Amino acid sequence: MNTHQAIELLQRLIATPSVSRDEAAAADIMQSAIEELGFVAHRKGNNVWAEVREHNPNKPTILLDAHIDTVKPNASWVRDPFQPTIEDGRLYGLGSNDTGGSVVALLAAFVALAKREQPYNLIYMASAEEEVTGAGGVRAVLAELGEIDFAIVGEPTEMQPAIAEKGLMVLDCVAKGRVGHAAREEGVNAIYEALTDIEWFRTHRFERVSPFLGAVKMTVTGIEAGVQHNVIPDICRFMVDVRVNECYQNEELLGEIRKGVKCEVTPRSTHLNSSAIEVTHPAVERLVAMGRVPFGSPTMSNQAVMPFTTLKLGPGDSARSHTADEYILLDEVAEAIEMYEQVLDNLIIEKSK
Image (cartoon, rainbow, N blue to C red; front, side):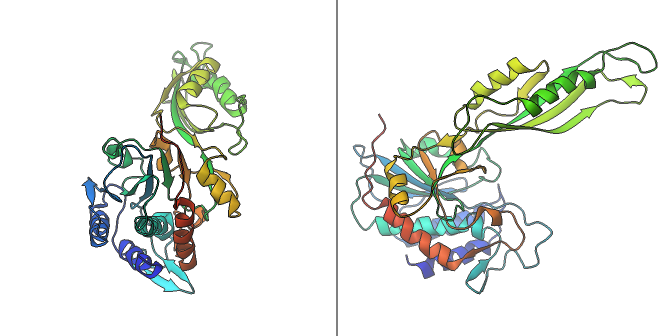
């Protein structure tokens, strides 16, 4: 599978709407492409995957993953988001950068690596529902893949290794007071009760700071209270966006937050943890030797739901993701195919104990 074939496949994907939870047509394309390349395609929902050859339980296993779903096109698009157009070395279209370039480049590398015996089992997966972290996405198939020892998650990083990624918790907080008449000295104002906790969220600094992701970041992003101008509110609800560094697991951080505030704190979920990979990992060392610079990524990916060692690496620029007239450079796809192969060919990694 050469670069030209990869670009043609990407054009087909762009021309096929695949908004999260509605990726069936794109999954059909990927299933057909994998089978046409001579591999057995497995499918669950809209997730499609293949293994190079018969699984060897004595070898470690590497997973190559990139998502086929997209966000909805925003109203600022000037071009047709589903019309793949090549101009001046750029391929325009929804999902071209996030993350169609990775989908096709990883598949091309998978095909190239399959031509030679490798010291690991190799699985390629085109996954669904990444943009919404849906239950029908990669989480739905991990158990069927068997034990994974290392994964490359294709996302637009300009082929620089993102060796740490922020996690996320969204907190629903409730401060309670007591109803009273605003004209009299009665009641307990829930808004005032919330102010102390809101200030804590604004100013508190957690002890552990990541060299790549910095400090944990907490932001109050919404508040709701009151029903009438002359009634002291007894309930004040507010929500908090918490971006977690790799020094903390979400459950641990949640415990510290609950100790710091008076209000009731309920997380919408705690499974979107931060992730990190050591700079001494063989894949990272290869990339550094190639002149690539490790960094920490503020945006989330399928790494958040993968309970094994992962590295985020892919063609394109994250700043183009979710923007109008999204594009990827043809040269970026070509470079990614070559670099993926260089990083992975005969890569020696340890099998998980």
